[in-house]
Length: 99
Image 1 (cartoon, rainbow, N blue to C red):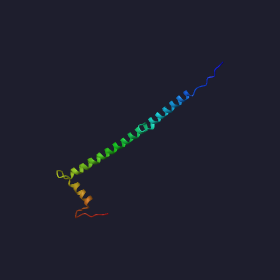
Image 2: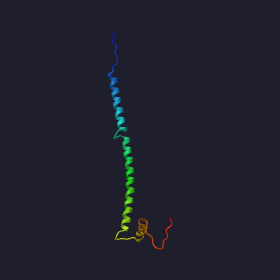
Image 3: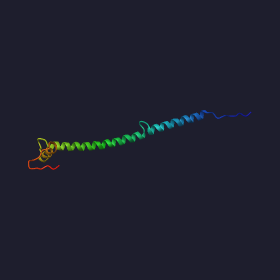
Image 4: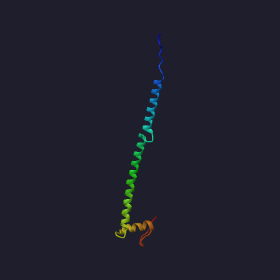
């Protein structure tokens, strides 16, 4: 008697489950919360924040320079005149304002 052997579904189920797990972990590694795309987004955001920090540090240095130039120890009369004109709207008696 010859015996007919039917292929079992166990091997097929095993390979399907293995493929599904590999696909899931690959997807999670690329697009998950800690994946490659998120890492690129974080790197780009860090670069933008570094540029903002550089710009703000330059602005702070400029403001500190102006503050020092208007301090009691070192008074820049030209800067004082400029600030009085722009902030307070003061003029000298011999000046004419054209708007």
